[in-house]
Length: 140
Image 1: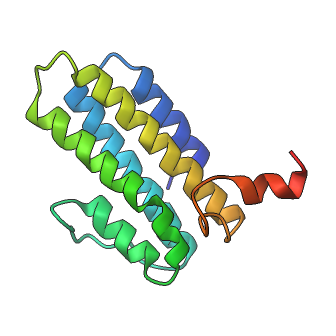
Image 2: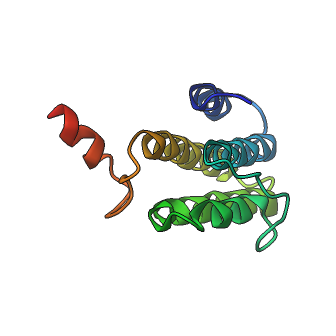
């Protein structure tokens, strides 16, 4: 299993890559799933293979938030990732597809950073998905 730092590096490579938007979208969706798998395994849960609304990412999120309601802070991020994936898949030749892929990459990076922060500080996400609790400890 790749570390969150490795997932972040991979997401940046996909974001900045030259691959077709559809290929980038598929890669980003897989990175988002790997991020939530990381969360589940860190909590001694076996990641599901099921799908929710047609996407494993949404099923993994649901599984991850079952015992931690504050994990729901990244629910909309997961749904936005799925949205951008669907837009890219539906409009394969659209001039907007590269922009959609870049936006999707930013969302995947946000998810990776949120999960990493949440693993460091369980209170992250109780009010919103800002990193305020992490910065409060370091007086930044």
